[in-house]
Length: 270
Image (cartoon, helix red, strand yellow):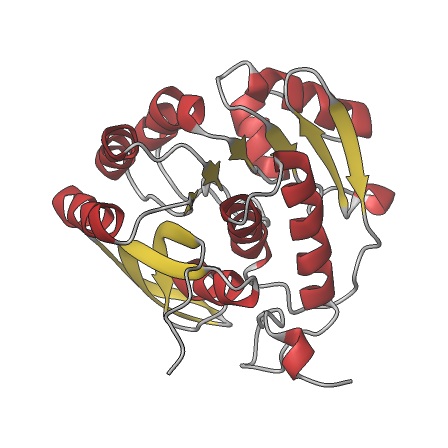
């Protein structure tokens, strides 16, 4: 009989996607791909599929805190990924519990605006995210629209992305990754990384596919998984981008709308 194997652990604090393409489900598959034990604290239950979201039921702040406490006090958290936190109360609760539990490797996917530009949380929640969460973040990963909201500027060029990264960094995170998936033309697939000293342009070939559901969740979860494994932050970010690109190259034919990426692409064959 083999002895139990010790593995790195990661916690995702996010919403559930009943369609399985994004949210908690995508995060746990990403953790598993990296051989990291995944744990979760659900903030909301969504009824959704590849065509859209039809219902959202929000968890209480007390429930979110209890889930975080249960995981951290027994299993431990080598790194955490934060996704859809829904409202000011949950954001404030998550920030307080991160500090109380001593969770310091924190990747924040600031789920505020969809890639298509639809606003997902209200002004109070945005304010709480800025004031309470960003100063606790090891890395924050806004898409184009979220970066515009956080930086207070429009993003059209590579220099715009760089300036937005600088402005967002001044809000307190250890590093910023401004994602270019919604940028126009050749900037699609180009991200800007800034840690207060080093400004990096990270570029991988853009993948043409209509099945992109869950890319943002997956990227931030992959960074968290790599941090849990002990990777340095920039290297963890590069590895995460490579993983998402490979998953985009193997999208799944699921549903009639925007399908998911192939988190488990090595198992799919050629």
